[in-house]
Length: 316
Image (cartoon, rainbow, N blue to C red; front, top):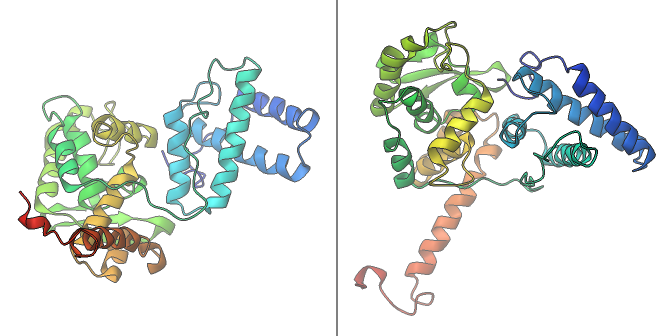
């Protein structure tokens, strides 16, 4: 599954979904008396979601909360303005609330969606020990275990976006050299280094488990029918494997954790920008806020006027 604005992975909206959208539009015009500009924007937003869902083999009547979350996560990866994402979220919430009220759905999958903050912010970051527990907790003997481990190794070990990991082909692997050729935003390519432990796990999946899925394409990460793994499926894998450590976990959590841990280790910001594939260092500078927070916590812990003159390392 591609990103919401990429076009090609999106499917044609079904007549049933289009009918639901038109009914909602009528309600906005007659009962809600929404302004024409608002109606037009909201209709475009919900149709965008419908097209994306169609590309995933789903639809407005039967989609899940996880699918809608994956759609919005894709918008964030694309760098869509937070104000635009907030408007799209309002449109989607209004639409599904109407479906529920009209009896077109038995539930509202958008009711509990988290609001996107208007300010630029980063999601929670995993600790190194949490990452290790998530990876070590995957049963490599179960079907799909090696695939799931390899996917998370790509997200955390190489700092890939979920879309980059899922679009990775076998030809892009340079595991014996410690590199992965990544197709990033705007069709820009970059070389992402990958450590020997992560590379060994990815290679083990490629040689031991991937062939069992009877591959039907040259993508690295496959579903169990040998086809491309959808974005929604990738999202669900991460939730399944990591939500015990962090309930709000998403594929991007591992990328943010990768960046934060490198920054805390002393990596130069410009180097981190190259590793993440950011077009501007301004985006990468968001991670310095997390580093400042760590420094503030350290300052409060050790400064004699903040901790009552106690030496934390001397305490039993």
